[in-house]
Amino acid sequence: MTYKTSRILSSEITPAKVWLQRRDVLTMGAALAIGASLTQSGHAASLAVSRSDYNVPDKPTPKKDVIGYNNFYEFGLGKEDPAAKSGDFKALPWSVKVDGMVARPTTFALEDMLKLFPPQERVYRMRCVEAWSMVIPWDGFPLSALLDPVEPLGSAKYVAFESIVRPSEMPGQRGAFQSLPWPYVEGLRLDEARHPLALLAVGVYGETLPNQNGAPIRLVVPWKYGFKGIKSIVRITLTDKPPKNTWNLAAPSEYGFFANVNPSVHHPRWSQASERRIGSSGLFGSSRVPTLMFNGYADQVAGLYGGMDLQASF
Ligand SMILES: Nc1nc2c(c(=O)[nH]1)N[C@H]1C(S)=C(S)[C@@H](COP(=O)(O)O)O[C@H]1N2
Ligand SMILES: [Mo]
Image (cartoon, rainbow, N blue to C red; front, top):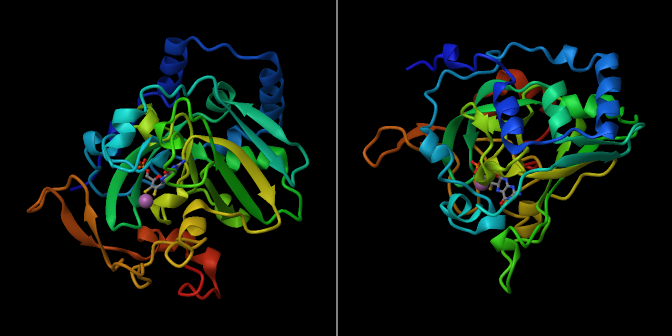
């Protein structure tokens, strides 16, 4: 079955507009100034990629699974916890600070990002390291939209990401038992981060990103395992050293830095050769499909890893 790209949004910016009106957000003067300079330098215009460029033909995972079966430990360990326990989280107002080894450190207000970089729908496969997968219609814009205008220095080689810490609204960050060290952190090599498939998602299924999916802005790197897709991002820092990433800190022998989907590199406790497609028809409501190298995006991304030993750099 083919996913119909004609289902795409009639207007690329409608979801953001509706959302902003609903929540009555005001744009600040300082943010406007940043917006103006970005528009002059033409970055917004250069992002006009066709919405269907990267869509996959797979049938999308039902919305109820996309927004009901999540990993977001700030809201608990269970797959149903994020949907059930994220109601107190306030995703607005929001801004993302981009700093480190850049010529022009910039704090981007969410509303300005949405205006400058109109979200486009892209349907990506997502595969968790626990061997389940989904096909998700994200709304977002290329991560490079925030990297180009801050002008990374020649010495910058990596991009570090940081999630929000807000125990008052995130039950998984309160109490004696702490599942992970906070903030959740992730990283990419700068060339990976600049690849047009690397997305900052602000919506899903044509609607504003629900809290459980990483509101209001999260990373989507479709050729990597799900844990690279850091949620509720507040800071992006350019560095010359490989950034720490949370699951590598927690269990270094099980989760690497690169985390490229690779059916021939197994997790120490389970095979990674096939995956359970959540919500697809099958004996138990989901069928197993073979896992593809780079999650099916080898043609687009294999060139990033030429000459690398992908068994060693997992
Ligand atoms: N801040 C934060 N980001 C996170 C996580 C998390 O616990 N906290 N879990 C990761 C993991 S393991 C996965 S598989 C994906 C799940 O994304 P989804 O719930 O939108 O499908 O989010 C990733 N990003
Ligand atoms: Mo995951």
